[in-house]
Every structure is written in C-alpha cells, then in structure tokens.
Length: 185
Image 1: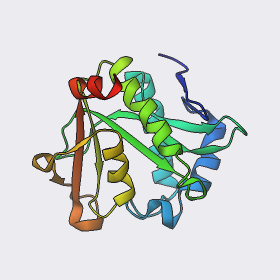
Image 2 (image 1 turned 180 degrees about the horizontal axis):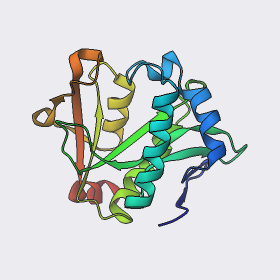
Image 3 (image 1 turned 90 degrees about the vertical axis):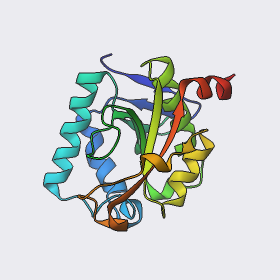
Image 4 (image 1 turned 135 degrees about the vertical axis):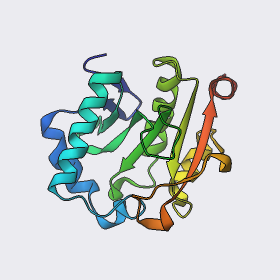
C-alpha cells in the first residue's frame, strides 16, 4: 500500500515525507511528551526512528503514520500500527501506538486517530487482534486504551531491559477481532 492515507473528521494519517520529521521532532521530542517513553532523542535515535517508520511502511504497508491536522496541515505527532518487536512482547503482533505533541493534549486528537487506526488494523490489514504497550504510571495512554475497548492483559506484561523507566516493566492491553466487531457494530 504505497502512499497510505487515512482520514478522520479533523486528521490525516499518512506515510511520512522528508519534511515531516523536523516539525515532528521539534514538537514531540520534549520532556513532557517523552516522560513515559524514553529520554530525549539524540540525532542517532532520531535517524533510527526515521528509518524504522519508513522500513515498516515498505515491509508491511503500515507504520506509525504521521498525524496531520486538516485545518492547517500541522504535524501533531504520529498514530499507527506496527509489529511488536521488543524482546518479551508478543513479537509480530499488531501494535497500535501514538505520540501527540503537548499543545494538542486533551482535544480528542489521539482518540480520533487511535480509533481510525484500530479500525484500519482489522479492516485493512486483517489483524486477528491488536495490542498496545505502555507503563503503569502512564495513565493517559492506558486510559485511551480502555476507551478503544482494549482490555488489560496482565498475563502478557513483560520486562524490557532496555527501558530505563519503571524498572522496565511494560503493561499490555489487547483487543481481539470478535470484540472489535461487537464494539464497532
């Protein structure tokens, strides 16, 4: 699926362009946004992120898409799906993820994008289920996971030794296709 594009009422989720990365990092590589994710990204880790989103799009037809506001074309962050690839996680499962710039928090953008992404995972990419990962103290993320209809799966929590926060403990939420069909009906 080259040049992927998914629209909601206020947003466009799409493949990345070269000019997207500078505003994305400027607005999301901040202490507030990265608080529960990782230390601020240096140039090497920014380049790694860039390579990964482009590679995933080419390999799978989906990635963590750039999130663009329709009204003004502003880059708000990302929302999309990738395949789990962290040691201890359910490797290969469809994982929904998002990152939103701080000045857009509390306006429903993350939820709007995540609902469209969740639906695309099932409708367009044939996911049997989707998962989402976070840390326990990241209430905003797991609150959104619940609003997406996802259920806490403590049996799938794991330790990521490369994650410095919260002792590396990652918690997992999941939604299977049958439950999604019930929600979407």
